[in-house]
Length: 403
Image (tube, rainbow, N blue to C red; front, top):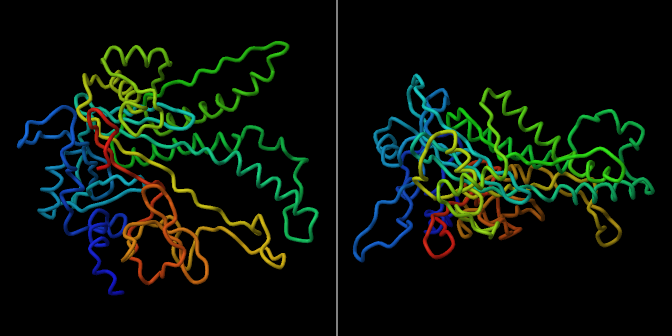
C-alpha cells in the first residue's frame, strides 16, 4: 500500500463510508449516525438543541427489513457487536443484526412526488418520519438516442462495423416504452426497490400525473404527446402492485389541499436541495395514509444518478490521422466504473474511465472529474454505488446545509 494513505484527508473520508458493501465494520463514527446540530429555529447561546435525525434502517441476518431505529440505538448495537454496518447503492447507512428476528413491523408509507427534473420521496410511519429524499430524474437519454441514431446512419456509408438496418420490424415490440420514458420510470422503480429492500414499506402513495386525451380532428398531436406519460405511469403502477404493495394515488389539487391542511409551505425553487422543494409533497401524500400529524425531521437525502458512458465502437470524432478509437464501457483497468474509492491525495471519489495507464476519478458530490491519471494501486476500493448521495439538514433562513 502506498505511503500516501497517511494523509489525514483520506483517513477522514474513509471513516465516513464502509469498506465494502455488505461487510461488517468494527467501528462507525458518530458523524454518520448523528449529524451536527443544525435544526430549525434559534438556539440559546451556549446551549444545543436536540436534533431530530432520520431513522436508521435495520435488517436481520437474512436481510429481512425490520422497523427502523434511532441513531443512538444503532450506535449501541454496533458498539456491542450485535450488528454490522452496511451501505446500499443509494448511499443509505443501514445496520444488519447478527441474528434472525421475527418481523413485527408497523405500517410504513412511501410518498412519491414525480417530476420532470426532480422527484420527492418520503417514508412516514404512524408518528415519525423515517427519511426524506430528493432525486434527479435522468434527462440525457433523448439526446443520447438521437446522437446514436445519427452516428449509426453515418457508419452505414463507411467501411466499418455496424448492425443491419431494422426499419422493417419497428412494430414488433409496440408495447415497449420509449427509451426516455423507460429511463425515467425505471429510475423511480430502482429507487423504490432499494428502499423496500431496507425498509418494510407497506403502502405507496403517488401523485397521479393526469394527462387528458381527446379523440377528434386536430388533437392527434396532443394525444401522441401524452401517450408516453400514460404508458410509463401504467407500467410503474403495475410493478408496484406486483411487489405486493398497496397503491394509492392522489391528484395534484389534492396534494395542494393536504399541504394546506398540514400547514406546510412549498418553495418555488424546484432545484433547491431542501425539504420544501419536493419532499414536502411526498411527505403529505404519505402522511395522508399513515396518519402522521407533522414531520419529525426535515433532513434530506439528495440522490443524483451516476452516469456511465456505455461502450461505443468508435468515438464520435476521429483522432489525428483519421483513427477512431474505442470509447466507454463498464470496466477501467480491472475496476468497475462507478465504484466508490479513497485516494491518498484526492480523498473520496468514484471511478470513471481510463486512459494512458491511469483511471479517472470523479468527485462523489458533483460528479466533476478530478484527475485522469490515478494509479489503481493507490486506491482503496469501498463499494459500488449507483447514485451520488448527499445529506442536507434544514436550516432556517437559508438553503439546506450539507451534513
